[in-house]
Image: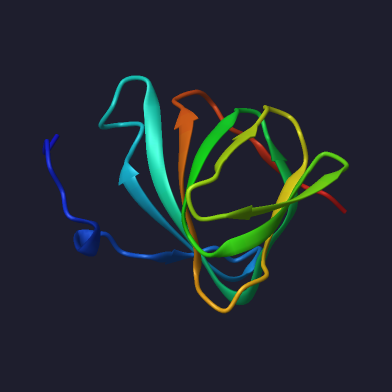
Length: 118
């Protein structure tokens, strides 16, 4: 694994279940033994629908602002906020600003099953 990479070298993959939402895998589960690191970008008026994962998420907001639903709570987050999403808890994201909402998301290298809330 390369020890240093530049963010510009990573392709943005469109997240099909959301609107105007993209993911970049910065450190994959194949590269690091314990955690994967991803960067998500949600453009203005974009969102990621209510879903859950079988693994926890540790997140750091790099830019913008959003409403993040975690369970029954709807929270407003902004640049430099830290967000923790426990495993199995339904959560969603909605960009509420005029800038891209961007965050780093670290997850443990365990099997992760995603379920969309219907």
